[in-house]
Amino acid sequence: LAASGEAFAPTPPHRAALGPHAANKASLRLPAARRGRAMGLRMAGESLDDELAKAFEREKANRQQEAETKKEMDKIFKDAQDDLKNLAQSELDKFKEEAEEIMMQREEEWEAMGNKEAASFLGKVDSLAEEFLKKTGRNVEDELDEFAELERYLGPQVVAIIGDKSPLRDELEKKLTENPSLTMSSCNKLLETRGMTIEETDTLVFCGDGEPLDRYTVERLIGRALKLRRVLCVSSVGTERANLFPFSLQNALTGALDKKRGVELGIVELSKKRGFAYTLMRIGKLSKPSSESGLGGVKIAPGDQMSEDIAVDIAAEGVMQSLMLQPTALNGSYSVVGAK
Image (cartoon, rainbow, N blue to C red; front, side):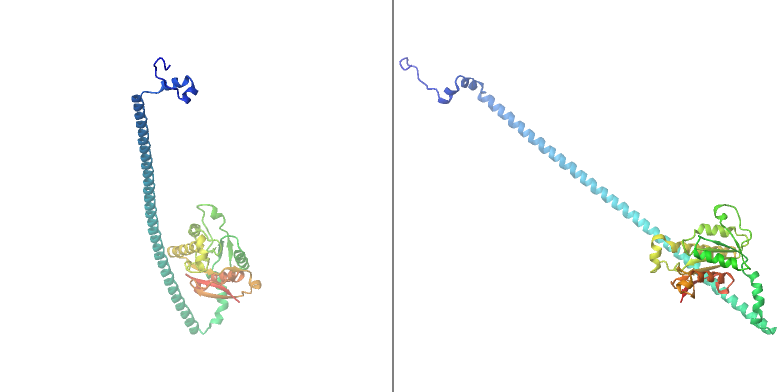
């Protein structure tokens, strides 16, 4: 090769090792211009991918922000709606309480006026009776026997007891049966029918010391009694103190005292319209008979006072005393509790 004058270019060792394939690989390389163009296209594609990724992230962030804004606005509207609803309900409750207070105040004024007028009238009657007896030379003791005979005509004659079966009702039925001047009638069928009237009953006794009676049922029965002269309602102490401790606890869950007070007011209202006499007898919590509980005594106060228990037989006797036209029991209310 040196003699022929050709330049000698030794083959690099790594190419010599690859053999003929090295030349083929070299022939596959792109020209420099095309390599530059391909490099530019690849960089442009990567730049486009970056822009698309950034645009996607921005759109995602905007959607999240819109969702959060919508959620906040929904919460604001809901809170505003709840506030308006609570405010409206509060105003309605306040208006209802004010109306009930005004109604109760009017009823109490009427009741107090009736008690005052009844006491004044009875006082005048007693004075005239005493004066008449003195003029005729007779005394009160002489008239007691005669009055006892006349009492059956002045007092109730046909009595009906309304209320759930209870120890107090059992005692009352026993005492009424033992009294020869009284006759018992039943209103049980009237509670299940419409249109029927109570023909002969002149006195209704409502036993509402336990579960509250239904005011509508009470007023419906009163309206059916054609010869009604007297209504006696056995209620519970605390009906006028339902907002005071400890009666407020008893009234909180079921509103029992409020319901009993509603029955009382209904009877008073119908008394003014129809002209029958009424008695509201509020008793303490019933206990065992006086022979077992030791509560053989009794304490009485006008209106709604005291809170002690009372023996069931003593309570029944109190009802009987009220029924027999005790003057102080007419058109008024009083409380009865037990005492040792």
